[in-house]
Image (cartoon, rainbow, N blue to C red; front, side):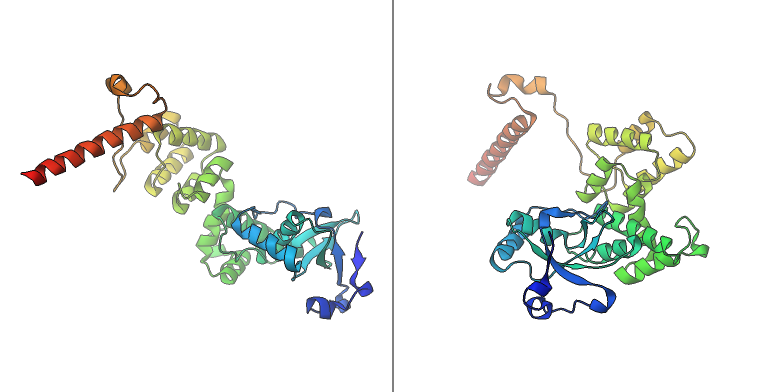
Length: 305
């Protein structure tokens, strides 16, 4: 049940904000666990150290800045801006949190949701990608754009808006939006900085089947494609010539400044290894320690001469 703040101390004195009643806005206390998340919310809510600091603050002081929600057709509420505050309130076991109820269209709610989160310091490439796409599509539905697939000569006003608001070039905005075409595993590798942005953009033009073939090749060869290699795969894909063997051949090409990888024949060392060493990591550590000890002895002998 919502509790109107008119039954409590004034909203201005409690939250130091205007309820903007002329536009039909009200401030209420809502149970945080009863507010539904924004559909396809692109920003991850992590229970990390920062979240625990927020939880501690909420336990001590409560939520100081009201979240923004909107009322759904079924009478329930949907979070627009304040997902982290909501999560902190749930963890802190708070019965209620202050919320501004705002009358928003789907497009207005999407734009507000994106704008209230996009400037976070720890935003991931995948989060930025889907946020940009959602805002572009919202602007498009508002009639402030042309199609995203146009050529530079038919520049989209929607892309220009995003670029100007977030201080990025139009091409950079397009690059991030292309990331939404990657499968989840490859996109995760972009977030983990295993694949750079530009190669990832080229990979996004591969079919989903080709992307899974590439993923298999990355895992088996323990290597990721450079931008040049990704462009070659894209070219072959467009020509209908990209096969699993071709992907392996491209991935296995030595890249500039690439560190050499060494493969060791386990059978040659098996008889020298302690019986309790069984995993690849344990074997690697044992051999490294042997090499390091050998190096130290060689150095000591050289100094003694």
